[in-house]
Each structure stands twice: as structure tokens, then as C-alpha cells.
Length: 295
Image (tube, rainbow, N blue to C red; front, top):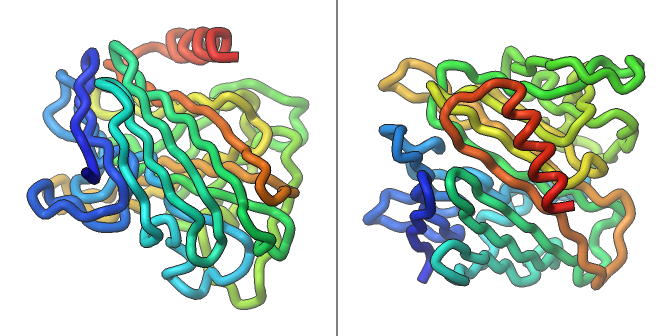
């Protein structure tokens, strides 16, 4: 079993590993939410055949020139387990290059939430530069507004919490937003290719959540911490939607550990919200309620 369908509250999700499925038109290499529909929406939030909350990259600063290494979570074996009527877990045994083992649990919560818990451990000393960075991509299905919004300000503004809009003009351009206080600089091998996580926006975020408008719906990603979390956006990361004559943006994020220990388990939690369009006051409340209940 490589995937299954879950229906809770207003949401119907297909959760799957990185296998292909010809019947569903699912391409190999994409894991997480193969599709996600709200009862009031006529299409998946995510680009068909790929995925949302897709575990995409293991970043060490080495080997990025090799696409098999660059996209190791896509090609390394992964298994699917249906845990309950509302939850599933993906397990990836130690990978071929980085020997990183991980577990991703998804749980649907009524009426319009998906909770994700990610756990991982390095099983060998192969991260030569001392850090581990992991990257998730959500390929959004042609929303009219490609922007992400969050509370923050420019670096040096004393933790300002104004609403900010983030939509880079092109792929790999000022794509990544760091929290206030994050000055960690990942290093890379000489000649490493360009990537979204290497380009920083002048903005910083003050609270660990962002949202986007999706044609009458609000999509919110809430995180259990700011430390180690970075937001990333590409206006075209999901390719072209010919029918709508526009590009599919990628609403992404990463989590890094600046100094790791072999065999030690690291983890973080996040909640994804897919609800009819709501006010910013309600978005603030979503974060406050979830942070208060899960802290």
C-alpha cells in the first residue's frame, strides 16, 4: 500500500509515499499530500500529479550538482502506513547518500486542519559542514494571488510585527524569509547550483506562521517554533498551468539544525489550515489557539 484517501470534516486528502500511481496520474518522487480538496472547492489545492507538504531536499552543502543527491527524498525508498481513519505515517529508512532516517505523520482534524509531525535522525557522520537542513515544497494549483503574508519587518526593525507581503519577481530571487535573530549561514561546495534556499529576502518574520489567498480560501501554515524555520516562495516553482495561463507558485519552508549529533532524534510540528477566506484577526486567532493548545 503506497497511499490512501482520508475524509475528515470539510477536507478529503490523498496521502502517499514517493511512488507513482498510474490510475491517479501521480508522478513518482513526490510524497505527502498527493491531493487535497475542500468540499467548497472544485479542484485540489495542489498541482495534480505532484504534491503538497512534499519532503524535497536534504541539504548538507555537498553534492547538490548531482540531481539524485539534490532530490534524495524523492528517490530513496519510503513506506506508507495508515495509522487510523484520520492519520498516516511515511517512513524513510536511512537514505543512500546522507543516511538520514525520517518519519512524517499526517493527521486530519475537523473541520479543515492537517497536522504534520516530522522526526528524523542522522545515522552516520556524513554532514561534513556540521549542519543539516531539510526542505518541503507545496506546489499550489494556480491561485490568482501567488503571495505569502506574515507578521514581521525589515532586518534591524526591532522585531516589528506589521503584516508583510512576500512575492519574489522570479524563481531564486529573494525567495527565503528568515525569523528575527536567525543569522546562521549555510556554506556550500564551490560550483554548487543555484537554489531557492540560498537567496534571502530583506524581510524577517516575527511569528512562525504565514498564509496565502487561494481563490476564496485561506491557506495557513503554522509552526511550533521560529528557531530553525525559514519560509520560502517561488512564483513559478510548480510549473505552468496552461488552462489558467499562469504559473503555479511554490509555498515552501525549511528546517535546519546548525550542529547535529548522530543518532539523536530531532523533530518539529506544524499545522496546515485550509478554510474559506477569513480575516487577519481570525488568522491571528488560528495561530494563538494552536500555539496555546499544542505548546
